[in-house]
Length: 383
Image (cartoon, rainbow, N blue to C red; front, side, top):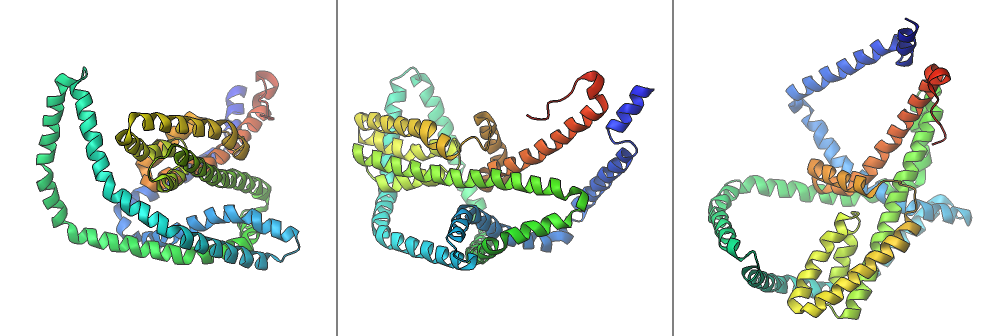
């Protein structure tokens, strides 16, 4: 009897019934929402309009806030530091674009025109290799299967054309949302940089006084985790792009600048991004010559070695403490659930959930020690 009473107190006593009641009410609300979701369409439109610029502003905030804080240490008022920083970045980006745009445009146009030929030559080389290898007997079957799928292409095209008007509407909607996000995110960024601490203090004051210390600690941990990831990953991606550009120039690979930019952008996504980035470079190298493919492999291995052993450990540090296998699983799941946005924001989202989970587990351990620690063994709270 004493053991059952202790367990009842451990799980919350009579409060557990209130908690169960809350979960039941949440379930009922979700069920009702699925039946009348059309009523909330205006709210969905509002959220889909607000969320993209807010996400962009937070990413830029984590990148720029340390610089603004540094300027404050030099006795520059925060608002003037923000203005100086924004004007400086705008001027630098404008100068870089004006200087590099002609070269990038020429390379991109040439690559777009030439890439189909690269693919064709790559396909022919791959076909010859398959036919002369142990896969040769299966080549005809695979080719026939591909032709069967291609024969269905006209029907699919007809279906897409019949839905073309809706597609045009969707594209127009996406373009409008993108323009709105680009125009509004600098304004949101300005106020985040200016009043970020005020926003955080306001959120803490929303909670009852009893929970404010815990809330402040959770928000601080989230800020550290997400901020370190965003800052570190963008710096790492930039370094990878620079290293690859230097390597491509050394081996004489065509379209070095464009391929390096693609690699830098895709490397924002850990593990999967660099793998995707190397594919166009591999195709170009194969068509060029086997020796170029060997040189590309050496460059890629060297860059990955430098990134894995020197760049990431020193920039990212151990702040995230996420196993590589966990990162890959999170990226796969987030990508399937939310598409490209999920792949980009999956790791920061996981970091936030990890902070909440760690906090709840810490509370669980303290509660366990309180009710069972004396006779059943205690959790180590210093982990």
